[in-house]
Length: 284
Image 1 (cartoon, rainbow, N blue to C red):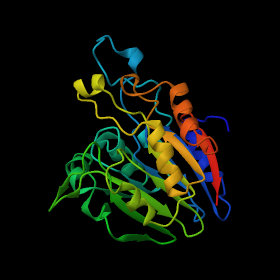
Image 2: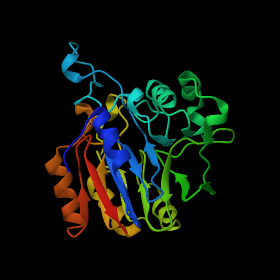
Image 3: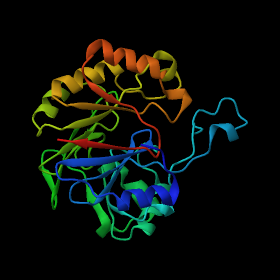
Image 4: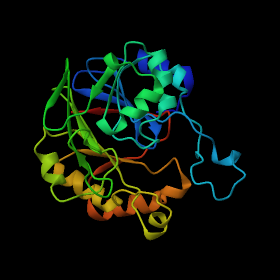
């Protein structure tokens, strides 16, 4: 489906009636997506809708210029019912993004880890609008049920007060479900944690890999595409969305390499890589 931007993208989300047993997903870049389930509410996951373009940077050592402009500005997000932020890194929990969404969608609630509460403070998110991500329980949002499991952005990190630092999540509408990995590698026990959840119909994983050059620049990577394919097969997903491989030139793999690695491990797996502002419909 064609890419849309700005208010045209919001209008498409608002005007699209999601059939029973289906979910509509709009790509926002990196691991950011907007998801509309059969309850017709729009959930945003890891939205990062700000930041300078790479083409505007004169410093050749600057690593974090965007490869493309955000498909939405934060103040244009007028339809959010829930915003889920998997961890406190700026491209997943952005104070500027959350502040704009919270103002434009005054009924939206923001779910984040205990580690990210300072960012929510910076964004001016009132305490009554915050939801704490807690692993091991099912969070009830009406038709939508959300479960969180620990992730490991290289290693698992747990604090007695703040809880898990990194999380993956399952969004389950009963008739259809989506898994979003956030940022993670395949740590010991990760597959078992996923398999203990209800089976998702589609999963999104960060599969931009890692290497010594990125590690030397303190750029935390994720699983390689072959590992993402292995996770998808082990979890029984019908479709894999290959994420975290488009926004920053310093932290991505060539698209052909992503495709070839996945094909080598899971040649029959349906794989979706899509552009910012593009919509995809997934059915149970």
